[in-house]
Image 1 (cartoon, rainbow, N blue to C red):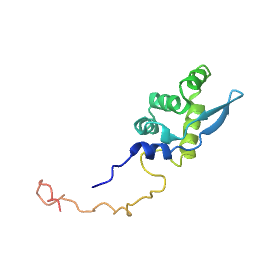
Image 2 (cartoon, rainbow, N blue to C red; image 1 turned 30 degrees about the vertical axis):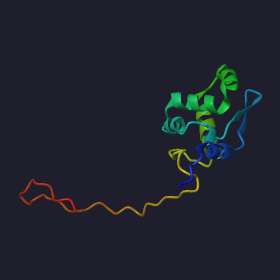
Image 3 (cartoon, helix red, strand yellow; image 1 turned 180 degrees about the vertical axis):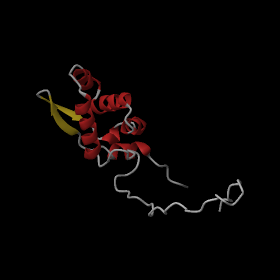
Image 4 (tube, helix red, strand yellow; image 1 turned 60 degrees about the vertical axis):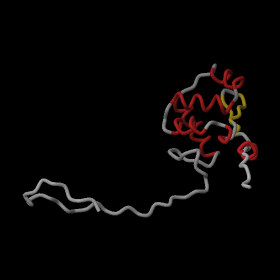
Length: 130
């Protein structure tokens, strides 16, 4: 009989220390991104401002987020905070939160584009795909 994969156990084991930061004379915390819905982080990482706000709310919890929302939030500061939070979680901008931080690129070097041309051949048909 096959063993049942316990996703609840994995989620519980994956929690990490929160990131602490100061702003407006107060210390704030953002939970490790393992506690934030990966779909929200994915959109936020693509620059979706509403998703960044939602990710912050999920990372702070409603009570702390309500207090944080009362403060001025210049885009440069909030972008820097999100970027730092990504780095704290072992991610970089543009990298999926769903992918492990330890996974490296598996792509090889790209090949230069073909220099072939159909000019002068008298034919306007496309070449066959290989």
